[in-house]
Length: 65
Image (cartoon, rainbow, N blue to C red; front, side, top):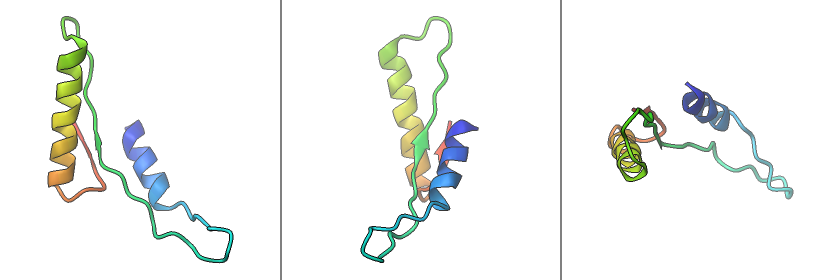
């Protein structure tokens, strides 16, 4: 939920470069993994990276678990 709120806010953030030009809307892809008892750091990172790959494969600018 937090990652998706961040994604939505970035899409609607206007960035003025200071010279009157504006950056195009930002987008992010995020992979989210939950720590559970017995899961170690490398397995958690692997799970998050797999979720990120799914988010990118879905076309980007999305959050995947």
